[in-house]
Length: 472
Ligand code: FUL
Image 1 (cartoon, rainbow, N blue to C red):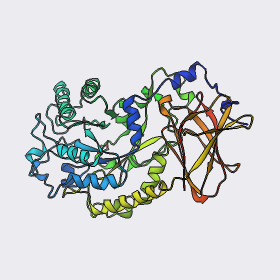
Image 2: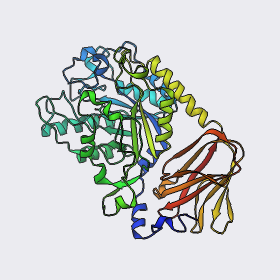
Image 3: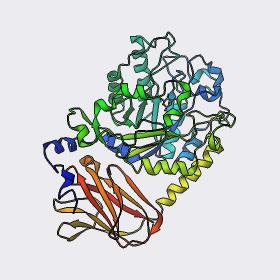
Image 4: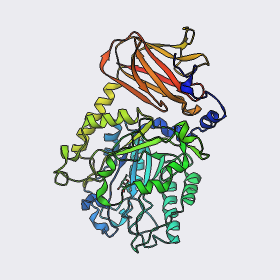
């Protein structure tokens, strides 16, 4: 039998090198973040009123005039979709702040709206039991100090405001885009200084994308690699690479939605072999419900398929591939000129939420046994288990029809499984790689199965499984 405990595809099961890989584990903040799995992005700002994707910093504050802004509505709509938190663009590249910043006049306080929207969203998030995260664009096309050392002080000041005035944050999201400022100069960002502000005031928050805790998946179309590894080399996810690969002008959004790196390998043993800078690096797929990040009307999207809006089925597919592909899903929902999530977006989100809820509605009672090389079965009454040295995998006996199998490794022990096979009543139906924080295996038609075997073919030391669930 081809299993991790027999030949492990020719790789050592637990030599020093393997231990080096599994010695890399998530921090507490990364663990909490990985539990969220699906959460929301909101792009809102002056672009909403100018019909642009990138503002140039010359926008007058008076154009920002949402007529009936209601952050409770945002939470209500998003929470219903199963979202666990919201990341708001507190400041996008145009430099306009949705919060009351002491360090610039270019804020919502000078607009007809006149109130701190980050504060309002913080209150709503609390009320609805959602977590709050903030996007603060390092690139600022309005601020006159941009491109000089003084800008780092300015940025640190704004970051400190966000980290100290709005309660607990789960994430600070730093974009990869780095362009020129007003004076034609590019900024040299003092990342380490930024990070230490966050660690000081928001020790539980992850620093995403241009930061150490969460890795940009590399596209904006919700696509994942065949194997999305959790442990990779820090150099391979460097901030410079992010900047190189992210949007370089306002109209490139579409380009970034495509993805040709499905086979790309960031974390196999071969890749990690000579790398000394290994890091726990969970992938995040940021994707928008509409073609653009900011809200635009029907006219803007008139040439786009389905009016520029992703269908519920597309969104669900993205969910299955990301949340079920060892990544998390950050779904952007733009807020419109009224300051609300529009019916158009609510409709597609509703359809999406229904598909996901239906998929996981019916949990099928199952018994689980661990399979040993000698053919013995060891029953486990808990779903959290480790395979012993002579155990090839596990068998699930579902008491009902099977549509979806959900697996999760206990990532506190790192990401170990490198390959596994799925058998339905003895017949092999899938050949898979990484499990990590979540693997979703779907069967288009409900299967009647007496037993489902998961045979681990390759692993970095003994596999530790946290969840093996069946849904009908
Ligand atoms: C990109 C930005 O340039 C887009 O406008 C958007 O904010 C996206 C999430 O990140 O790099």
